[in-house]
Image (tube, rainbow, N blue to C red; front, side):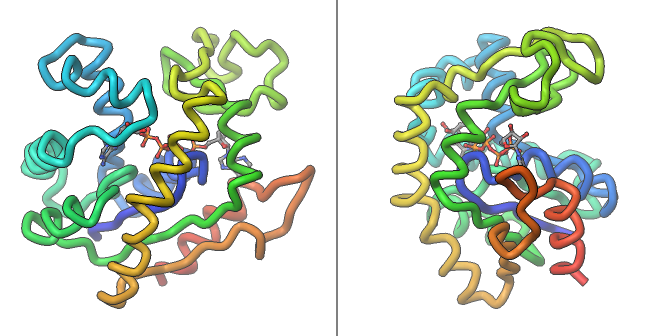
Amino acid sequence: MKLIFLGPPGAGKGTQAAGVGAHLKVPHISTGDMLRAAIKNGTPTGLKAKSYVEGGQLVPDAILIDMVRERLAMPDCENGYLLDGFPRTVEQAVALDGIAAPDAVVNIDVPDERLLARLAGRRVCVKCNGTFNVSKLADESVCPVCGGQMIQRDDDKPETIANRLRVYHEQTAPLIGYYEGQGKLRRIDVEKLPIIDGDSRPEDVFKAILASLE
Ligand code: AP5
């Protein structure tokens, strides 16, 4: 299956993608993770992308389209893919339709006020890439899964979060209409799921995603 996860920053795309990708037996491809790895390794793509990612702006379409075209040509994508963070503009969506058009697009809808709290409280493990909210951690600098160091992403600082949300509403939200027009959109509205301790639970979102794909 060829699947896209769409949704604002902090919607839980990365949290759900690993489990759903494993369930569907397709690779989880996160363009955000690919860009952060390129920046860390100082590759030519990383050097070009750094200032955009750290400022919460979109990296130019041409860079992302080339990166995804190369990744989708790899043998592990023979049976499909789960794209998380791509496409993010109509130009990227049109390009993807020419490379390997998706079968379905899951849009995870979360209100902005909930996103702000999630992103400001997010910590990521440098070793296993596990993502947790600071409120769920006994020690906010130690990963509860592998013991690695937990850090705050550079783009999770308050001023950058506001910019990412603005960019999402202006440039990425129009893709909801684009895929609705193709009859491929599945909507997950977290406000319709049980709210426990002020938020939905990842396991309920997971079940809702699988049900939407049946
Ligand atoms: P990217 O890494 O893709 O960031 P993003 O889309 O902003 O998404 P996030 O990773 O912030 O959120 P998420 O939806 O994965 O949520 P998560 O699961 O972590 O992109 C980063 C940057 O790279 C962009 O700003 C841009 O510069 C560049 N870029 C990437 N792709 C690009 C493209 N195609 N074109 C141009 N530029 C591109 O969850 C968030 C938090 O919520 C976590 O703490 C988690 O524990 C918690 N949480 C998750 N689900 C739940 C739940 N159900 N209940 C309670 N808490 C939850």
